[in-house]
Image (cartoon, rainbow, N blue to C red; front, side, top):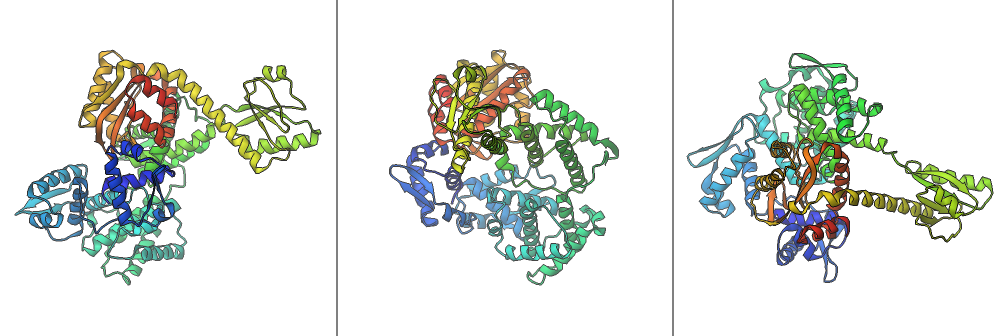
Length: 635
């Protein structure tokens, strides 16, 4: 499968229901004919994994999808990106240099194409300090620190497995020279022997680390002793690591060294939480107060996002521990990946945005840069705290139940126990009186008997003893009330935010930078934003791409610096590569600080919209501002 076919398969699986070919072609930025051809190729290779219907469109067979092995090592790389990854892996896994002529023959490409691939590889390895691509006598090789090479390899695998890090069977398919599942069993036996616990969510990434370690050792590539953290030698992690390597050498023809024991012990240490709260930490010769940092974070969250976590001890203690662990990992040169990162970005975009913001505060305080993975970890703390805070507005309910007091009390108690976070039963009445209901400002009427009225208040009938069907009725009603409230707030705000002057259709640009520059310039010309706006947008984009898997990007500045609140819209003439994803809709947010609540509304809309195929298709087909706004608010 090529990358586009993988995206088609992933999108169909995420959607979970039928998608018409026309809608799929719009989202993928290709023709209907290309979609048909891609699906035919996928089905030929993976035994009719995609079901088709002339009326309904396409749908994934979930049972077949779950057993699918994503890694297709037999196929010849087709696209520039596939060739880039293939060549990098070959360089990492072979001790010998690669001959350029051999690459041309293996990949069935010209010398010119290989030259272009080499340029892409040089761009790819720029962030990996100390790693160089050396070209000598028509041969290629990597020169650099073994730590850096393994980090590059791990990052490639992270991309390749495409979010399936919780499935150890799929991870195991990445390693062809040994049975990783057998290695996992050995590892778990060693952990059990030493009564050593690791977080369940950490297991997949630790196994990726171990897989890379073994694969590199099979090629006789070892870590450099002088770059390792020797302090772990006297720890239980070192003992666990040593025993593990002793056992696996009986199954795999490798020679382990102390460097590898120390390397794995450092990884285990990095994934282990700091359990005791420390007031201060030592970092680069300075003693810094975590409590002062947390106070600054809580105040900034309140001022910028209108979220008050000042009394949430769980949030403060959890983030305190996270900062301690983070400093420990940085000092020991341990990097851990976040298996939930893409899901957090897709499902909770604003929570992730706050994670980016807090990460910047932490980085500024200590003097280092926070990675996208760390921002994702921080976002988990924010999400949990936000849930605790969300006992916000409860719907006011009147319960009408013409039965004796004891039975009414039982019914009220059952409803309250089940929905106490979302409703407050303000009144229990034996009968319906329109005037009293009107004066009570109720959001919902729940009755155990049928009633008819002309009030615009949602009403549902349940049985006295609250069956599962009744629970479902109440749950559905509350979700409908949530939707109504959101749409009301959304319509009140977004009609004025999306201005005809900043709606651009059929923009013809090749790069995200060109699109952002064009849109920022238009906002600047109308005095909507200051001169610093564009630089702040690029700074935010550099921290973590704002593109999503469903043809949309939401660039925005790192800080709310706009003079007026507007959202600029661009429908591109054709999809462009925006970091990992092809993008055709760009929504540039220019929000002033006083309107920070608009960000919550917008990202709530976004998290619901990016998986709504019908709405995304309609947005892509919009030809003017009014159409676009209409489809923002309707399916």
